[in-house]
Length: 358
Image (cartoon, rainbow, N blue to C red; front, side, top):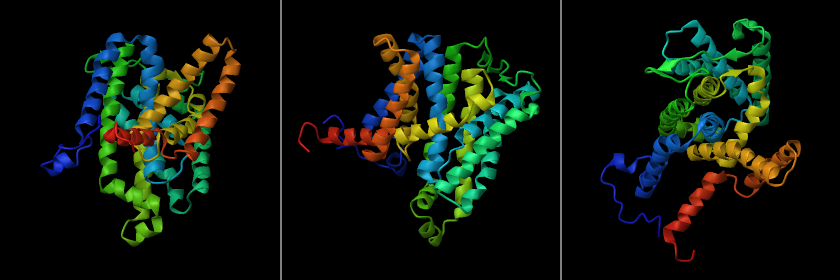
């Protein structure tokens, strides 16, 4: 009985309402944090930080943002890539306009600007929902990409049309720009993602999160018992856009460095983040991390196996990658709609009574 809860009594409301109330979960999180803060920085190289860990953290934050809107509030969105582009452009404009402004404040302001844009495009959710709302957010995706591509002011009138993050320091440590150390960028990204993830977890466990879930499960009944759909949906859009905007700002500053917004944050990114929460688990914070890790790491694994192991061409391996992800999405939608997070819950239930049959 590896996952035994017997004897773990709580003597206060704070202990009973803890995010990780069970001792085994606390040990598991402590091990993950030790690996993240000590083992990975010690053993990892620049490729590992730049191509694996930072993308996983950035997409985890974007998946949390979309999960708040789709998984918790039930509002389908296909404009995640556009809102990430808003965050990236806002971060670039703020950094170049205010060189002395603290980089942490720049990230938060980028999220707030994206929240305002998301609030604007969330207004249609008051009248439409489901497939029609998805089409409305898809229109936002194409409109914002067109806007950033056509209006040169967003790129500070650069001839190439790309935006490049200038070097910035946090507490005397360089975290952006070509000269920034990859490990420093990873650690800053890790700390920022952990703080925002804890904030999101506490938000969805409180009254605001319950109002979102009430609107998701049955909006008419939720309105009859006192919830206000207007404020609830718009709040979900704004909070979701804030997280997605911060993820976009971090993608530009800590991961990519230089991007062309219309290409780097296109419709494929929107579908990619949507697949993360479908495979990871809708309405689950842990599912956002699991889905992001799965989507980022699996193509690398498939490419190494097919190209390096079986000698296939890279183009052929890419086709197999599309087929694999399509099959996985169908599998999770049919067999386990709650994703990998639900599979982990089932494993914990089995471990509670192991080795006895069940």
